[in-house]
Length: 138
Length: 318
Image (tube, rainbow over all chains, first blue to last red; front, side):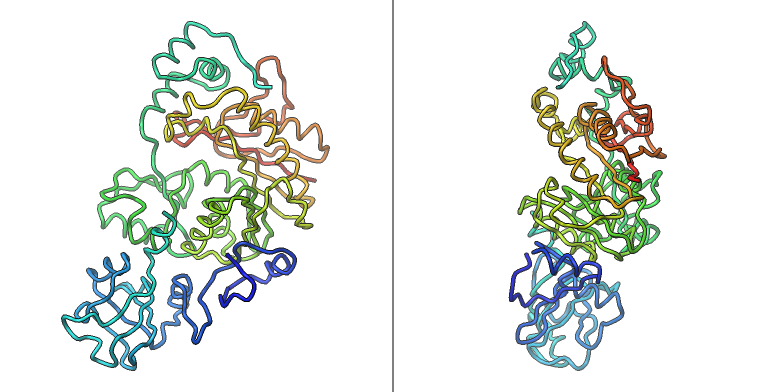
């Protein structure tokens, strides 16, 4: 729901603006994230960025087994990560990708650099995932 | 007023055999061709369809991905719609579904949107829009351009719709919590208006067998009264030269041809345009005779067209 003073960032078409200024929409455009201390992408936002080629340096790619777990909201073990950008620090927001480079979730790193690949440890916390649509809708 | 017909040996026999109210079967014999075939079809699960979301993928890509998981798919008369002939897992539980690559949607709904004939950069009003299947299809046909105003008064349904819009990557749509009867408050006119009106749902008995006995002639009257008000409100929102598509998932003429006929009589500037798919609409029912243009409306029957039961009218406002 769209609320006044909301920190949501929404992608809208110019033609919708006329309605938005006159009416109070329940929903408009595509909520691509929230601006709090930093910009936190939504699932739809992550998907849009990835599709537009804006993967940048904040991503990790997980294997097929981890993909299934992420879609149930589970965190990520180091050995499940098949690729991660080199520049990741600790407590960094990352877009979680599957092997087809599709956005499957948003996560936060627990370790910096190559430590993110550490075996036997959860190294990325899953904050949001594509399974959320189904869980929330149901 | 809902017309009631005399019971016959055929109507009482069919009603008893398939578990329907007798008044309903007496009526079906007046407007459903091949009633026994229809009732047999209603005993079987309906064909499941998925609609490819071309905002996120292509039909070819989706077919390849689902087939690799063991799905058997068949192409249909609509290029973006596939019939699911075998599903090794629930169709709503695949990763492709979660990523918004497809929407589970009956072929009839897609035919209704096709009748709207939308194009890029248009302004579209979708009355009674939730849960958003038709809205997301309109958005993909418009390639996420222009604007869609979707009306849905119920908060729970509006919420579900907002999830579907996000999942499908739609960004040209606003949802307003508004009853379609108050659409004039928008103070706008639209190139296209879709009214898939709330109805008695006679066409979805295969999905909900309680419909065999759960509604009464008074319910049909109630729906028809509301539909008459909604279609008038919707017609007022169309730009000159624009199109209003009126649809229901009912077979009842009181909810379909009679509603459109009444609109034609009341508004002198509306013409019923022909459509490609389906059987011709009725031009008479009981003692009633309708405007000859009503033959241009379309009826989709489960046992003939392999869809849910549907009525579609494309109305051009001059």
